[in-house]
Image 1 (tube, rainbow, N blue to C red):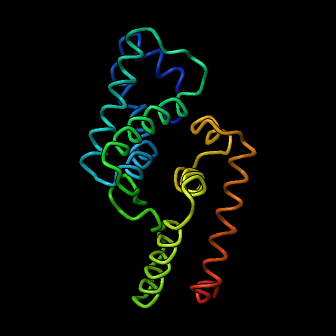
Image 2 (tube, helix red, strand yellow):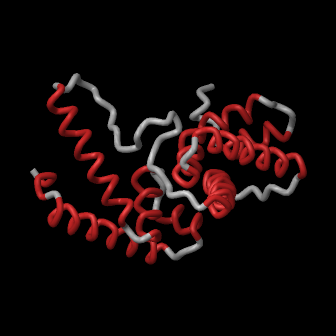
Length: 194
């Protein structure tokens, strides 16, 4: 059976029943999103890897202790654990978040299904650099929602549950983030609109 077809609930039940491979499937299923959420906060690959491992150790301990409440929200739950552990670390060292993927590559890179010319790549790299710079200038609340929505691929409901704000507040923060980004682009980099 394809691992994408097995529900989180079934994987969790089978892991608790003793099938260790089910935990591996859960980790693989959510590795990219969980790691990215951590890395955005801590901005260090080694620390992000440590917190990623700590996240899943906490998950395993919760499962084995019988304290996990099955509610079909594993993704949100594991993201909340990761986010809290990363924020705890961030508060200790007070580093600025960096926007990258779990493999260390820039989050703004897109999949290329065709070979772009060197000139196109240079232009794209410059656009990405400018957008990253503008995102760093957004208020923290707006930046968080923007990153979770566009780069974490979370729904507004998931963002609401993860951050403890209402869906309307998340939508509002996203709206203002986009308005502010457009203003910065129009003011400081109008060439990006071309």
